[in-house]
Length: 314
Ligand code: HMG
Ligand code: MG
Image 1 (tube, rainbow, N blue to C red):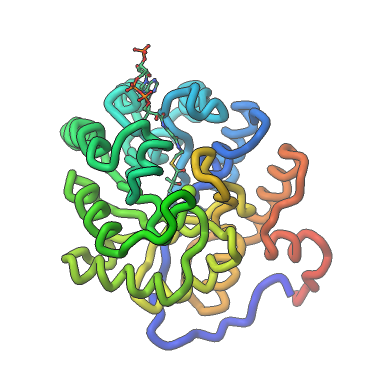
Image 2 (tube, rainbow, N blue to C red):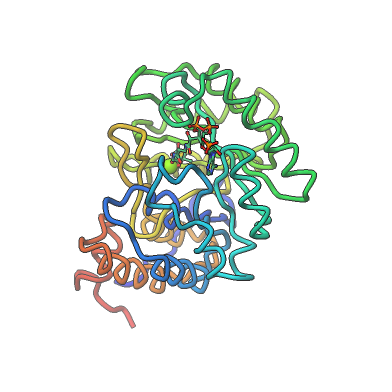
């Protein structure tokens, strides 16, 4: 089968927005450097496949993430298409670079834990806000749309369990700087479904609306789809995913790929939930990208569609 039978389940949303992070979260973690032209083509193909949001790159310190040191060249190569794609910026220096290139959407990325704040941002847990605040204030004044990520929401490789109250406090504080969406990151993929439901409920109790929240699952322990299902049941309608399941974080031990976009689209399609995404086109893009990276995609759906286990129903 090349598409699942559609059997809707009660209590599910009609439509979900997929926030594609493959070009950023995926490629930031590659060992080798991917040529800028290949990145641009990857992004163009993802946009053409109907993905409504494609995060393009990061304006971070090039020494910290050499894989994305070509952020400026990439945005220039993409031209007008690029200006509508979100980019990560950690600080005012990153903001200046994004503004010079006409970017209209930025994302800051905070940490729910002290250790990861220090490893990823070279700042303490509290200090990170002093870095983000002027970035968001100036970004908003320039008319930019701001997303905030919070990492290590379900566990931290150095600190272990992360209390839900701590995640909510940091997440709310980041959001209240002036963001319009907060993405809750399971950076190392250790979360499970009950934890997901509990965390979402805690954010709602703290006054956040469900449509202000997005979920960002990494699939290290194979829980990303189960966790997505739990979040759908809780009323979340924005999910981060990466084409072919690329991804990880170079500063988080044991972080592997994100939830694969194709695995997500397959499940949503089976549930009758609209995404506007052309599954075959994304899977073909992941196969093309895997050719450039020199290894097969870890996505079960990409492998099934590409490898002949998918029988045509046409
Ligand atoms: P720092 O070394 O503390 O920076 O790094 P600084 O403010 O002390 O500045 C030192 C020098 O760096 C200065 O240059 C700055 O101009 C320059 P000098 O005056 O010495 O010549 N500099 C920059 N240059 C270019 N672009 C910039 C920039 N900022 C400073 N933006 C910093 C602090 C935040 C910059 C650094 O820690 C950094 O770049 N970190 C990024 C780490 C990263 O990208 N991690 C991966 C993304 S997060 C993630 O993947 C998780 C997520 O997917 C969600 C989830 O899964 O949970 C989002
Ligand atoms: Mg991530």
